[in-house]
Length: 126
Image (spheres, rainbow, N blue to C red):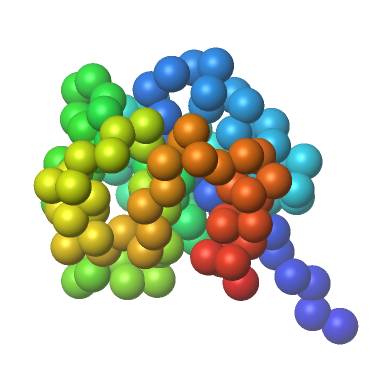
């Protein structure tokens, strides 16, 4: 019998409290979770161990989410990585950029309860 591995998720969030909440929530749902606090650190983590899904904030110091998506090049270099943008900003230009650069979904943090976030993640990785 084959043993299924848990899906891995990289949470890219600059606010430590939010990153910890997402990490705990996802780990309780049996996902393997790593955290990066900016796009630069996230790129290093993707190089070290490619995740199944990236939960990405857009507004971060050092390297923001849009620049991260540009450098990651999901469509060409990592088509097997799912990206969900999870942000507080409802700026149409950023939303358009995120989709153009390979994001599968754009979710406003204020509109998604923890239960809804888990449902969105489950749908994306299964």
